[in-house]
Length: 325
Length: 293
Image (cartoon, rainbow over all chains, first blue to last red; front, side, top):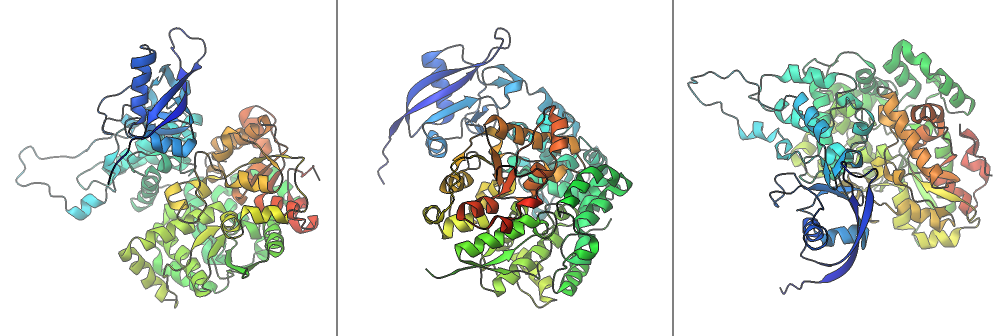
């Protein structure tokens, strides 16, 4: 099949900032003819080589392996070396805004201070902790099935795309973030690792651990290596229960409370779930609950319409449950 | 045109904390000539929390819900983004993993059910756009919402992960620049407000364990819509609605700024434009008063 290279005009609005000199960042406009063969990194190179030698960005492997060149195009984080310009224009049209992964962490143009990312990464002990015999008598075999359990978590290249796309990271500075969680899972799922419980205990802590995830799916959407961090976060939640690390707190009771509600009604008893999760702390919800009540938004337990064929649901909960708390 | 029929998975909130959503869904369906067969046997989808405790149980229960839609030989329509994600995710996992599907079906067989994978699962918003079409909606509008700036709030679980979501409907949605709700606002005669938070998270799922994070996200969303000059917001998700409508006090405290806007369900907005009687849309059930009518 004949392959033709096409060109089109694109306007780039490029974030510029030098923390040593500038009080505020600004945006520079560049109009370029872009070919269908180019990737975003080519554009960054052309800005530096043809327009302004001071333009700064990180790059290294050009093969989507090193994770250095992650930036944002129209708010979407991506690896500059992997993302074709054609896709970007298809996605967003001919006006593209190029920004660093995190504006508030910008040091110079596309270069950000990733200190917090590495700090969280280190906090989950991202390495194999194993008491290996100095002179082992045989190999430590890992079966293909056991290796499968890693579920691509080992494909992470620490580019930071998910970390800086995570809304919780922006608000709660203690939160480990999706990249650190995916990395933690990579070792939690490794049969050779001996630090399962130790690592899980850190992941169970409020503010920093998995319970503070808002389930926005931004990390699943953005990951350029299809690591799907949110699915690893779910698996970590499951491990917390399985390994008995999960203690009774508002978050764990909330997850377990769904099962209780479903057994009882099929559908959820919303008020009952909040009561079960919060315990005595439910008093703090009274002001909002009162307002909701006056607007007909609260159904008492006896007013709930249960699912029909509830016996089926109860039977399935009994036979299909795999977790204990 | 043959009458549109769907199996309706109401989810739990429509029957409890957002009764206005149930009312307006039925009113709009009636106006559009859609027949909704309610899945009265359905259980809670687990709301993205049950799977944290017991993933397999969550799969079995969601597969059971879909199996009932399959029995009716109908597309399952959801009216909650989180129901949509959980159900569509279950479908995706079972349709792509024969071994898992067999394990789930082994359980369902105990109650005489089977998950086949024959029913599509789609949110009401996309069912309307795909099967009726925005042009037809536009023709049917009797009270154009032309005097309003309306801020769309999409809700995470309808747009991400896009690879999964775009399997569920024909309308291709770009999660970084979604259009469907904007297009529906325009079809209803309103002005759509473009603002940064329209595709962001409302914080609902961390409300109990991380109230400050949740309230900040809610506050940012309302503030973004207010700064975009919105008269009100509209959302297809009852969980986002609960946050934006009932939690304005916490949201204001969290971001240090008084924020509040009326928030309508997508069905209520459509109902107003299509001329449904106002009392059929349940506008009196809102905590933040719908002050523009």
